Length: 388
Image: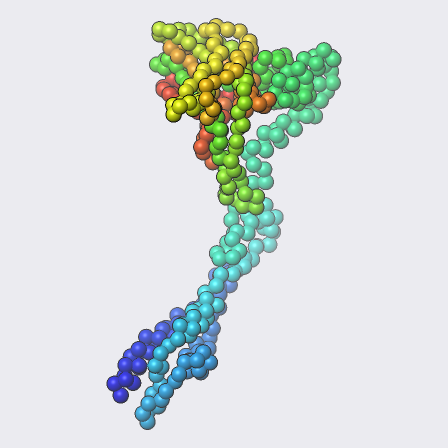
């Protein structure tokens, strides 16, 4: 009798858990929301049938059942884990994803399809705001195309010599003459300037600008180029999932740098300087060596272009960084068509200076996307600018 009591006590929590399960399954709601039908639970009779069939289920899964005494009391000596799994599975069946529907009012179907769309349809079904058809990056291209009709007659009216000048200007940034003309005119209109520009092979449309006003006296911006770094690429078919992809910059000499620039600066201290330079890092006998190659700017230079070459360093190259520096000066520096060539390829990021101020992004987290400031203070600023 003591053994029976122990077995009965051991079984009571499991039997009580079954009754609790049957009690917590939701009943059909008496009041329904307008247009939404909630999940319907089993009827009350079905719940108690599950409880009444409990001994039969025990026999099906291999649990031994005894009857003790004339009262016919039923208890279970041991409850196999499979019985708990079976009941847990029944609970999952009644707790799966909530599926509902929405009645769109008559006459609102067009507005619904235009502004809303179905969200997650698996776990929490819902309606959310519809995604934009065009990203912000594509709006710029749409804006340019909208000028095609009005710019086509203007392009046709140009002489062969004028078109050749536009072709030469476009070749500096990898565009045809027609595309260079459209790009320049669109940027010109966005800057609020009427008329048409004169093509220039030294600089085109958007250029980089560093502006220094009091109390600042300088600025240094960097574009790092390690031998290997990772860029996050978007996974097709997902909204916000990225995968790191390795970018290798195989380095080989000579290293050639080139830049177009225009300066309007004044000295604001001793030893003023303005320059574009690269530092090449190499390893030799356990030390990191630095080798410089640079192009110096004057304080008041008209638009011009120059290049410099580094032929060799001591030890294997570990990477390099490009810098544009203004020191103890105030005013404006304009630059365009940046080149950092090695191995026959231009490795400068944003060579046309269309978005100079873009530094670290979701894709570029190890190195800056274009340029990043190293020591910026009040009065110093840099970015892209339309130079007319």
